[in-house]
Length: 83
Image 1 (cartoon, rainbow, N blue to C red):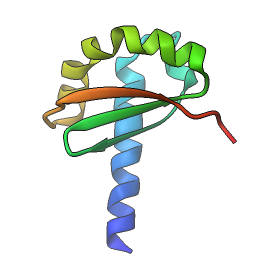
Image 2: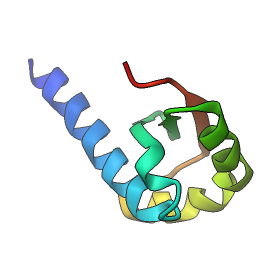
Image 3: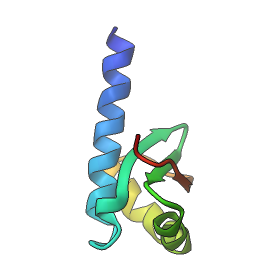
Image 4: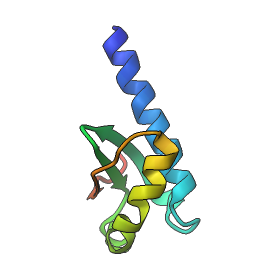
């Protein structure tokens, strides 16, 4: 149970950090984020918003690392419609 709580806390912290770093126009369309093994995964609600995000994803690597207090090796942008 403790591992589940820790995972949920990581997801919450990563989502909050990503929403701070992303431009105001993209942040509302980001609905989930996670940080595992140095990789931040950002899940957007549609391909249109994800495509916009992919162009700038590398620019967010360092700001995300600072916000998370971790080393971020890569930022992956994915599409997963809200269900």
